[in-house]
Length: 562
Image (tube, rainbow, N blue to C red; front, side, top):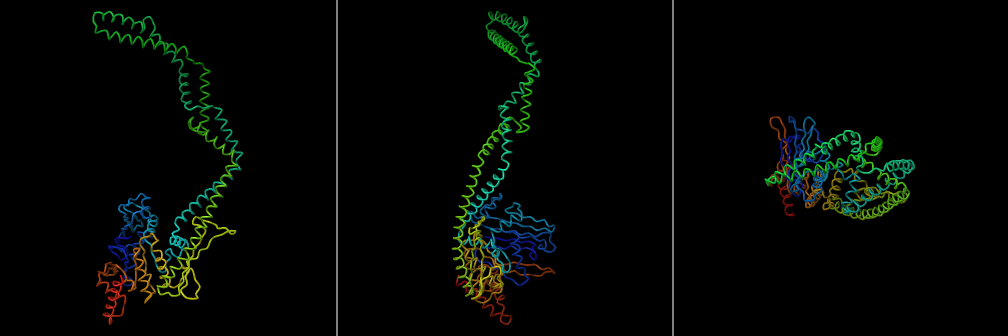
């Protein structure tokens, strides 16, 4: 619910801090005092359009901050989490700033967001109800949503949506493959050519690196042979390393006969002689098998050129080319069994469509039943709101073609709320109700039957009691109070009955100081409420005492009946 609202430099409000609680909260005030400013403030933090004209005269910017406290798992918290916004302890702090430059800033828990994101979040936090404004209930898609909400059709609606999306995807896949069939021959020829070209090369992983090593050896064959031969001469010549090592060993061995500490040195020289002999043997064998024929270099160059050609066509490495070969084989296999594949896709689309029609039928039947019950419940509440002949009806019509339903992502139904206020009067769509009082009570009745189903925690009514007085106003007050037992209800009102029924009452007042006007917002205690109710009752100065007594009695009547 909305816990607190902080407003600075918005219209006539210089600064206001308003705390909210459970139950029914009203705010009242003289015409022109600025009651609509709080509505504007709440609208800004829930994504409404921010106009620089709202900024208080002489100030560079306006700022609104709202604190919401929500239960674990609430949809608004889940949405914020999807955006990467932390939601500690179920709190959302929404801030909106308007600047003279036209630049605006929106934040949720300190993270910058867009106005569209605020609008999405706001739709999960507050629903605003105004008498002569289309705030949702008169739109066909909203009426369908509310009927499903009333009937608890969420699982069925989700199933229809999932099946519809799966069916559309299957149909799209079938259409694409069918269109591809026209290019089947051309594609098969291309694949066969590519596969044959790669297979003929008989590539092996790592082959290119090995060939480059061979190429490097062949290009420098003369230098390699010269180096190896020179090394052998140094090792094997009469005065080479091996001969000198043998002479050195004999000399040290002779000396070791007289000094045992030289024995280890003899071992080192013997090891060196063994390694040098092994090196000479390896180099001799290397020269014996060294192949540096020009034909071999030409063969390696041709092989590398073939690999580079394939890599230009099919991948940057031999491994990439081989991966493309596997992919091409798989595609060719699919094309070879194209008719079977197409038939499978057609069968899948047909099966999904049959499932979709079946669940759509179930949803339609559930909506018919829910429409009857909702029509009855709303009509009953309208009767309690001093409309004894009112009839509210939820009409469900199914889209069909050749006798079969035509499902969409929300099923095949369209829903219309219709209303008749008087006996014998034809029912008309809710959007065409001309009487403000009738529309007010109808909207309230709809909200009342959805009180326990609607997940949005706060309802905001803007002068929903306008054009209604007497017993009808009392009935509206009672219904608002009953609704507030389930939801937080905020209400701008001119009705003393509604104001008296509230749990919390704020007075919006305009004061002028030094030629400048500003709006103040203050909570009323019991004495303040009596004074304000007396003003709303408005019997004139000569009967001020009577108005005060009436106001006190009105307040006490709701306290007694609480």
